[in-house]
View 1 (tube, rainbow, N blue to C red):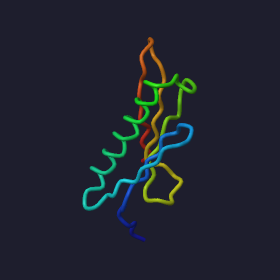
View 2: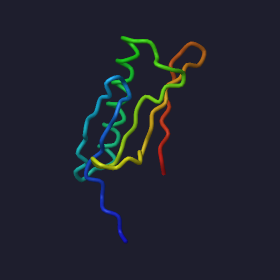
View 3: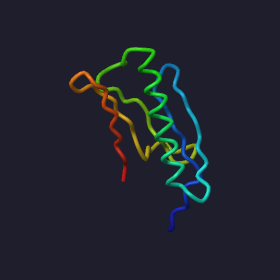
Length: 93
């Protein structure tokens, strides 16, 4: 059975309260995924500039295909290494 193309990505930043944004994929799903990843990282960086890191490592956010899927296509972990924040994406293939 062929899979349908991704229509959008839902991005989540795991703060209290969580932040969400949806990115329409249109004809270029890869570009939408890049925008969603950039938004999650920007929101995580903004949070870290204002607050301390909730835990080390911090499961900072995720990106999901569509509006209802609970299986992420990418997850962002933030941790410290030698006193610096490291932003690491785990892409699900």
